[in-house]
Image 1: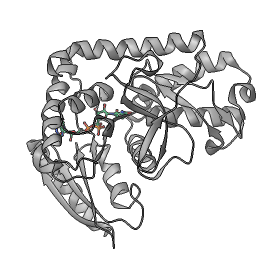
Image 2: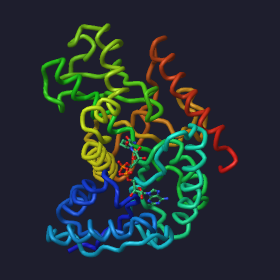
Image 3: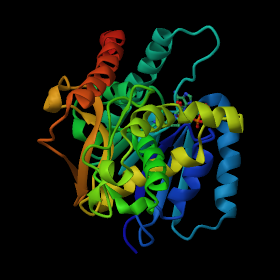
Length: 325
Ligand code: NAX
């Protein structure tokens, strides 16, 4: 058997992790030949709940799960890791302003960035799920000074997957028939689900669907408000689908996306006029354990306006936390 991969997961007692941890232990990230060791982080008051989750992991008798550690210390959680799922974050509580939420999370991700810098392998792959995911990822990367910024990413994949299914249903095709679709920008209601280059079974998706009003007036808002719709229906926020999206993101990054585009929040190099250093969703193609931005796309006036709007929000978020960068 190959060496086990060490995977840190934060927010381990939370509802996303109640799905995520079992998928990772089942081999859904690194494949069925690679054993894993889980290094679980949560707050001191959540340690007992994490122990309960670990009891259930044990009771699954996953052949690939070679070990689990539980801690409330980020340095211990991130030591020697090959991958990190940063799920835990401070939720918004009643009366809390958006600015306060950003700062509370910025503090968490600053501390965790320093610990990541100290302990993680330099080629570790990191996904930030905890909201505000893009800005948290930017802070994490900025505070992990000797850790490659390109190895810190934010999750846009849930928005991506949500849109794929809506398109597939409308076009009457299977989800995997749709390619070259991207969600740009922030994981927030401003995100821009862009179908301009997308295809269904190789044919241009806008032509296959042939209903631009549906795209603008139904698809875009449906995806943007899907999180809220799920809370209203389920009485709790997306969990299994969020865990699945995190798995898809990491699996593709590790094993490749077979030439197709996927949406990842990555640190901007200035492409598409997105200010450098902002962690924005862009189209990437994954292969051989890395990703490459899809370059040279032409954006029409509508797309440009949508991109500008979501990027402006990211820039605002960056300004709100600038002291911690
Ligand atoms: P839960 O509230 O169920 O769990 C969060 C867990 O994080 C708790 O166990 C809490 O103790 C822990 N935690 C808080 N601060 C921590 C810290 N400093 N270090 C370690 N652990 C800490 O939330 P859950 O539903 O699991 O969602 C987790 C995060 O994902 C939230 O921020 C949520 O907004 C975000 N989401 C992001 C999505 C995305 O697409 N990027 C979609 C799903 C989800 O809404």
